[in-house]
Image 1: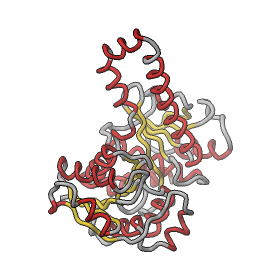
Image 2: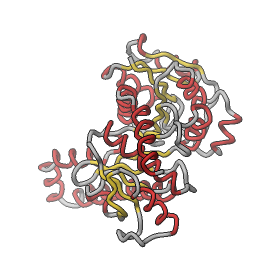
Image 3: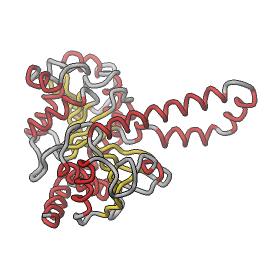
Image 4: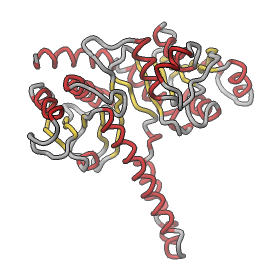
Length: 335
């Protein structure tokens, strides 16, 4: 049975929402959860709930890293934080995977320092699943490395392609490089050098792609540096929220709109499901020598549950070994 360590204190609504998601996950999936946080707090919360106690274990951690703390300093200073202790569980093989909706930088820093990187990988990357017209696309990197080298983006392309194939189920996914235009000569020197590197690889590279391709379905894996990728993610999230707001506002403005809402409620539910980040729960941190999933700070119980489910899928499908083999073969071809 897959064992997932979960940061009980990470996120805006921790620990109650995290616990709710954990208990839903152990009820639905073949997993055990190590719930990491202050033992007295977690015991008190769990005492008010019904669950299979054989599938939930409390791992004591006396400290919490707040969202506004400097990641590297917090990891060094708070060695007994729920993030540090949870990652250590993976390192010590007490857990097969780790999930946190807490401080993203601290998770990236802690995982990189404690678990190390896969062989030949120089920087980890955060991979985000985004909905599009035909299904989903994957953006990597979404914020782990804001000052990369071209070789790092090549490695992101390789890892993203392997992840898309193994976890999202599409053979030979297309790979594109996010740029200001589709022409090969467009972009900065950094982007042009990256284009040349990926073009030399055996990946299914379709060249440069623009922002519109994220949602068109023409490209499966979209590669970007962490700065651009994170801005893209935040803009996409805000667009989804404002579209939902405008739609609800217009529907509520008169009786015709309210009637249309009642008649179209099944359609609206399907629409909300497609743009709901909680359907995937979190973003894998690819490149570290262990399974690490990073959740949104606003993660709901549903998001926590689905993040645990995706962590289980990564463990079951041995994603890191597959990534490692793909990286080795691809880099050999490039060199």
